[in-house]
Amino acid sequence: MVQKNKSVKELNPEYKLESRNLNLFYGQKQALRDVSIKMSANTVTAFIGPSGCGKSTFLRCFNRMNDLIEGVKIDGDVLIDNVDIYKNEIDVYEYRKKVGMVFQKPNPFPKSIFENVAFGLRINGEKSKSYIEDTVEYALKQAALWEEVKDSLHKSAIAISGGQQQRLCIARAIAVKPSILLMDEPASALDPLSTTKIEELIHTLKDNYTIVIVTHNMQQAARISDKTAYFYMGELIEYDLTEKIFTNPSRIETENYITGRFG
Image (cartoon, rainbow, N blue to C red; front, side, top):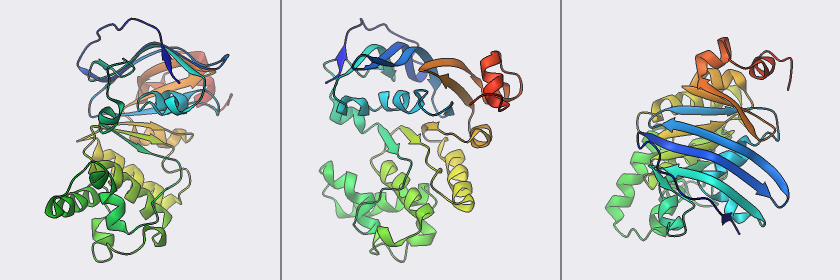
């Protein structure tokens, strides 16, 4: 059960995602320490840092997945479109429609390709067959998968390749028309060719979505992101334009991690 105990402060509405003085505890263990960040709409932000540094925990704050963990306590503000998403009056079910999530390993449902993408629409009560069909096609095109599967939409999603499965999961997230896509190491389980396709897809999708990606692959962060945040031991050490982070970081801790002297 998440506990929230801090007054809400209005932040600049030009930012799509924000946190201010965010602390998160798993019981007595503090996993995030005073994290403040602002992310603009239609950008790609990469979270980097060693394993256990808090980057995935922080990512999950933006879709309230940490709510599912017993004993989690959050102190601070987390805002989307200038609305604190941990306020009591927030309808979590409605809010989550704004935020798509893609996990490290592809997790297609044991259904057809078509039904995987249509699943969220049906859960949300959509009955129109034509709308569902049009939206499935739209989402698969957005995920750069339509041309590969358009003649086999009723084939099992389990039967397609891992890279195709991950793009299918992205299509499934897109189908319910979110404005934000959270990606937790979406290419780490894929081969190099599939990874390239996912990276190209992310570059295309930012025209319509605000994307936040957790990655252990610093070269990937450098290739695909507009801004990069470096985390260590639950703290946000540095956050800046990706080019600056990788060529002229302000903090020696960041430089040591980027150059391989640490981590």
